[in-house]
Image (cartoon, rainbow, N blue to C red; front, side, top):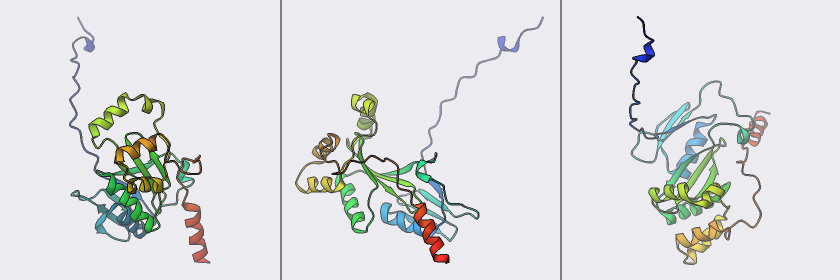
Length: 221
């Protein structure tokens, strides 16, 4: 008498996962020097190791948080803002004033955000690195990951709009200088009261590559 193996096969219980932490992101680049300089200015990332072909950068106790590789044969992207793939990396300030002070510091260096959004759980400024990769600099509106996660899960506002309204960082800076608290500023921004004077209709990051390639072509003439 024979039996189908499935009659006696034990169903293996799934093993619980030991959750790993996100450690770093790696980018292919055509200009290691420009990328190292930009990430140092914007995010305080310092090179742990740096050569013409690669760099490993960190701004905390980790051995690196961003890696940059300039491998032979690397080609410029075509229509990067509208190509599937990684949209952006993100860095977070624990303190609102550190966050808005960083905006002011970068503004004075001529580095401006491409998009500024109050997502509800965070206020976020999106910058674009020399290769056109998005970099979000955010502050948690709840100052507590548990509370902001619960808000995302339960709030009707987030269910209806996961992006949130645009804000003008200069208006946010002025509001803070006038004495408004971070909570009051978030309330105004989320209500659309600190929006830019001109409506923002394009959510795509600017495409830096046409200008970069033209500069390269001009330099070789």
